[in-house]
Image (tube, rainbow, N blue to C red; front, side):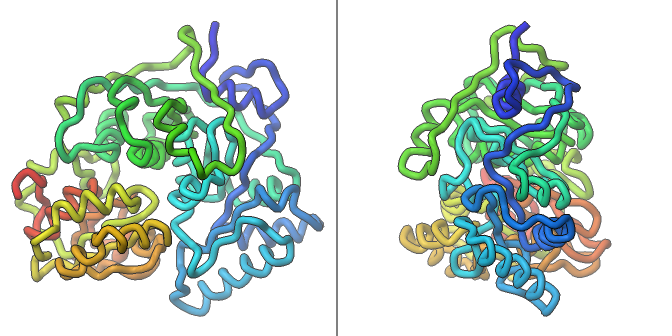
Length: 419
């Protein structure tokens, strides 16, 4: 019996020839990641346990992205803890205001994560990096503290599920629609503690940035990790940015999967996840009677340059509806600069958008776009739980950037083909 890509990467990091689902292993990590919410807890545990130094200052990555620029005294204190720890341990990769980006857009962009890695992060969307052919998963802050000190993590090898996408995707359909189709089919617990492996010719033709979006939301189906085998597109993406040499793993033809799901990309239309679960998925065209108050384009899911280009394509020459607050947050400083260079920020400004700095901001109900009671938002973010973006009586609809931009123009949920 063969092995999946996830099993092979875990085995390679555990000093074993092979591993099997359900097996517990003690594995080496290539990157241990924390942010301004989760890292302060890990730092406290690190110190309380008596640890004096991190296992490798090039492999512990701290990113002050959730509440920066700091919105209040508490968030400032959180960031200060992280900042001082990074200086004390001379961490190579510490990102703060001016250099900071949304962590799961920043690390791939900077070449900090590479194919074949095993990555843990004290943030559930760490699974994003699976798009590069790595095993990446979220952890608790205590696990992060242990990994910062030892360079190791204790985990159970997950079972694997296969998701095969075939056919040519149509206009305005991207990775966000692919993953919403998956979650809509299997539900928010349909992949509980399982590896979600995405493949097929529609995945091969999908840009790497769209793949990052897909793996980002594996956790929304309960997945332990999402993963896509590295290929020529991955190699091109990594060229000139990868800090370390990649290790390429692929699944064996006779690898075992608990289930295989198939999707025809050619039949897909832009999708929207309605409140209050990512599994509540419907075509955007069927929701055109739903009025909205706010649109957010950004986040670790859809704040990359390709997302901003799509949004600008829809918004060019148009203006946001007078009843809609349009917020655009490029996910990293490099993306911001590229959007400025290409004239995208001017398009957004002419559309009456508020353009903000790289930050998680409204995605988690943090700042820079909180909803009041009764308000609705269309967002390119990844979660729409009750109260996720503000008041418990507000509503969040998840979409791709094209739908979000079109909805900002009309003031209601809109399939971009309508424009």
